[in-house]
Image 1 (cartoon, rainbow, N blue to C red):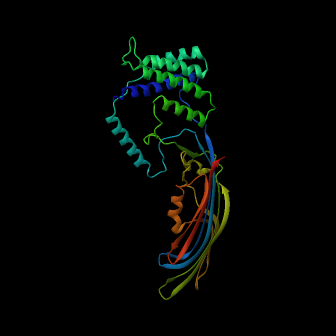
Image 2: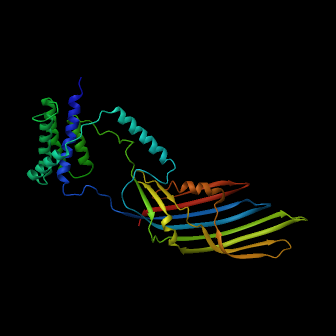
Image 3: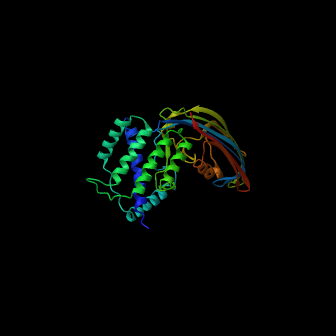
Length: 355
């Protein structure tokens, strides 16, 4: 059984939709983007660690409690892009998609290019007859598509059978009736049913090779970057000197909060609009607090220093880095990790919501 009538019918449904869309959108610009979006990224990361540490020849036992908080305003231009600069697997997917598209192109028969000028002229004629009456537009577009596909003077198309012409006419009438329904799922279901009854088939699944809708957010020039942190670290250790074992005791205690917009341009986040997953990059933002460090050794003068104290995540570093690439609109997570003979408890909460 020949499939040519079905192919003509599918093309006819496409032509009907294209003509109506062209006539309804003639007063709009061809290129439009979504509105810019602003979101605030908020992080709260806390680490508690009990376990061994080693610096060179010195070994000790550490007790650590620290917390780091981050908040910044980020902005997207609202235009989805097909790539994710923060996803390590994105390059592999892009290559696979390109290979799929190439293979499909090699096996497909090129479709005839539509006569754009003719379609525009038909759309202008439709608009002159119907104005913004969607029912009239669908009815007249269906008639034009049926006539064009049936062949005529100057037409290179093969004529189609009367039954297909009747189905196209019926589809135009049904689609016009669907336009009178409220926008949303009811109208979409009506349109899908009209296509099925006309022989156009169900809507197929989304083409996996199509661009995926990622929104890229960057730190605004003045992003209200708020940083806060605290640390309470105590280490008891020892090392072998020439004549004896030297006992040591170190402390690092600090807490502060500040605004520091100089790091705003380095911020980036990517939102997958399909499932809400968020990737965040804050690699250049300092994780340190102002505080006091002390060191004491047996039979030697103590040492004191005031200044920045770096916050380290120890065994939780990979966990934190991986979690920043698997965020959502809001949530929290935690883990208990081995730390030598001790353990490290890491907790993180986050929000990435419209400002």
